[in-house]
Image 1: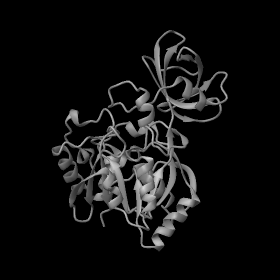
Image 2: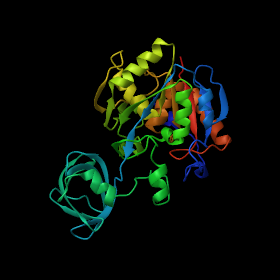
Image 3: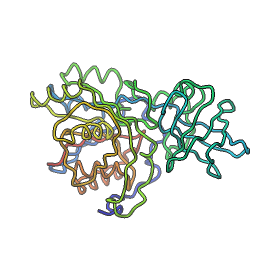
Image 4: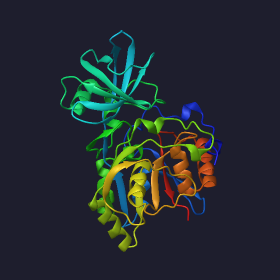
Length: 342
């Protein structure tokens, strides 16, 4: 397939720059991947679209304050975006500068943090933070929330709260699992009282999620690697739902990728490690029946994923409808509930 097969026109003003005033106050577009039928809902109607015995799988990753600004020893400005914490004093990161830093170069970040460039790995650098035993704590003190590049304002205290799910607990993501941003504690309680099982996976969303696809033939694209964990409790919850005739609803593409990675052998198994699973039309889904997700960028791997899940023509129709009806797009935007195509 060609990259242009996953393009669409999006007016700039439909890119949400701030979230809805309250969690759960967004719109919800419901797409049936079998019939192609579309219906419009309020997001809180999600409680009417699940039944006792269903299981909802959330990604409990926590966004870290991964962005740091500073300068090289030469005085040139740099911006560091931590991709992954490797050890107590080391991290893998993107480094933006007028000239790429060399191995052994020193950086000073936030006027306080001294960093040494250890090596380059493709588009990333291994950095060592001086006098540091906990990179996460250092980032919390000196870093800023890594808002997506299409959000124009600098992160503030409001973003620190709203660009984080209410159930986030495992630090490591540099982008939020945005489908989960719509849920507050009250809505989660309603779902549980309704008899819906709520369980978790972890997938630390990497900065590569915003990298454009640079090939025309999508079969040549290689996904960035992200760390995931599917615990045994989640495997058991999915098995229990199946036994009751319930459906598996992945909250977000990251939850779906973790589940489908762990179920690639035909049976969902607990496990952890790195995944670079690239889901495109023709992919055989083994675990997930329904997907809750936001609207995705043109020509992105996430748009390819939802096209695989619902069918290309159905997604084209749904996105055209969303644009016409002025839905809000991307991380702080509205949501879709998709029933998998047969």
